[in-house]
Image (cartoon, rainbow, N blue to C red):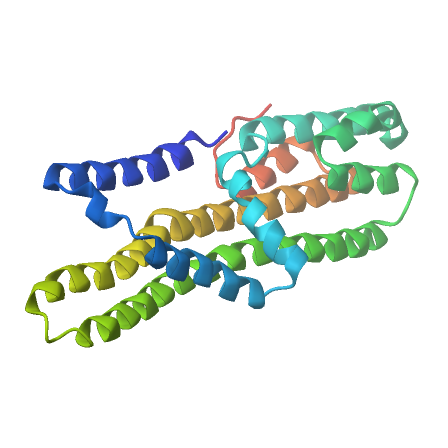
Length: 253
C-alpha cells in the first residue's frame, strides 16, 4: 500500500478544513448548487469524453493510487535472477514445475515463460509480448487521462458556477446588502474546483502515471529475463541489466 497517497490527500483536506474553521463561519463554505455545478458538471463532462467502461475504470483506478499491487523492484530482480540461474544450471524445461508461481507473480510473466518453456523462438515471444505491453500501456494511459481530464474540468466548471453566481448577483444591484453574500456564493464554486483539482485529481493522475511507468518497467524486465534465459546470458549480467532498468543498485549474487 502506498501510504503517501493517503497521507498527502488526507493532510491537504485536513489543512483546508482547519483553516476554514479557524477563520470562522464554516457553514459559509457549504453550498449545494455550487457542488452540483462543479462536481456534477465536471463528472458529466468527463464521462462525455470517454467510453463509459473506460471512464468508470478510470475512476476505479483511484484505488491503484493507494494500493498499486506492484512488487518491490529489488525483490523482483532477485527473483528473476534466481530463475535465470536455475535455467542455466538445470535447463529451461526445469522451470516447468514453477509455471504456476510465474503466473501468480504476474500473468504476463507466466505467459512469457510458458512460451519460452514450450520452445517458441524468442522473436515470436517478443512480438507477442510487445503486443500485450501495448494493450496494457493503452489501458493504464486511459486511467491517467481520466483523472487529468477531471483535473481540468473541475476548475472549469467552478468558473462556470462563479459566472452564473455573478450574473445572479448583478440582478440584485438594487439591494447593496445582498452583494457581499452573493459574491461569496459566486466564489465558492471556483474554490470547489480548485480544491478538487489540486488536492485530488492532479495528485492521483501523477501517482497513476508513476505506477504506469513502473508497471511497464516490470513487463520489460520479464521480457529481458526470458531473452537472457534463451540466450544463456550470465545471470549476474542479467542482474546488472535489470538494476539499470529500474535505476537501482544491486550487489552481484
